[in-house]
Image (cartoon, rainbow, N blue to C red; front, side, top):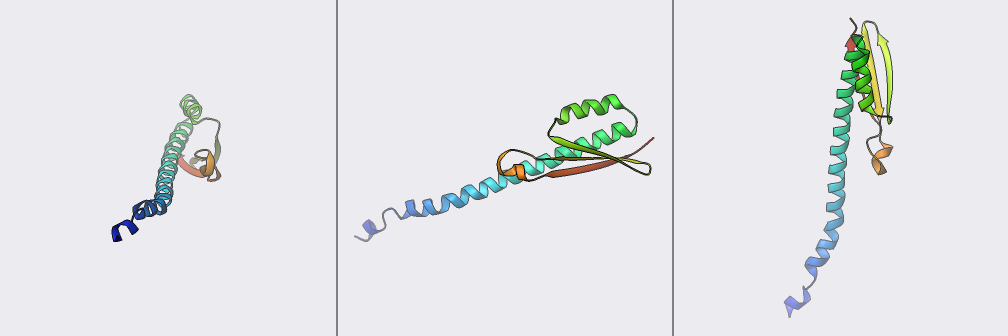
Length: 109
């Protein structure tokens, strides 16, 4: 009779654990998406700043065409350095409230 009383216990435990597993999985995937977006912005800012610093406007425009319209670009000069800052929201949904920023500077020639 003792076995009959424990019936469904595994189902109840699974129902309690499943939401926690889904939340943790969502946080991990969201973190990976944010890190990937940051790496992309850092790479693009570096490419743009180097191209603009050496006066290669064709290469800079080609990189800017890849960036898209959802990225905000800010340029500044700091002495002999040409700096480019990029800001963007990585995705839609909850992640759209987070803004990722990256900047890079290159010496002007």
